[in-house]
Length: 160
Image (cartoon, rainbow, N blue to C red; front, side, top):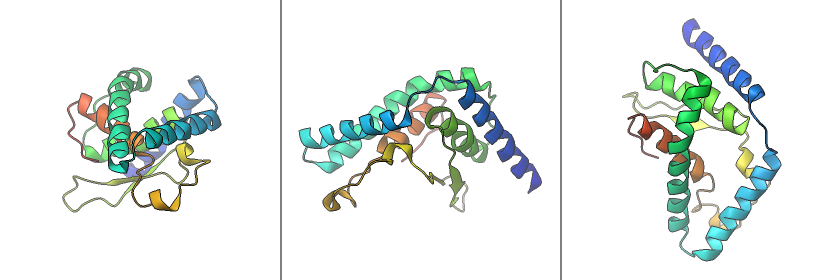
């Protein structure tokens, strides 16, 4: 579908433009700080499920605040459907705040759920999880929370 390809290209261009205009912070610093933060949460709480929940809640709080800035800076009007929302998040939101774009895929047959994939996750750039945490710790659950918080603020119900 050529209109979908043009829309993705347009969104990618918008994300690049917004990223170039925004203040930058070293992604290495962000990654290391986030890693230290997650390590601290794990040290304070032996329950990995509770740490996953804390990361989600913190992300939701961040998303609640970021959505206003995102809408103001992106000048993006209302999206027409969930597919457009997903592409805006992947191509504009991720670029604007993390300096990377993401891919949207694996849509459910009913069109109500999808997966966003980061080829390079800047939060996990310097991370090697211990084997005992690899299957249980949702290291980037903060990102899920940010998306959830932002979308719920504009009345889009989300499950992570």
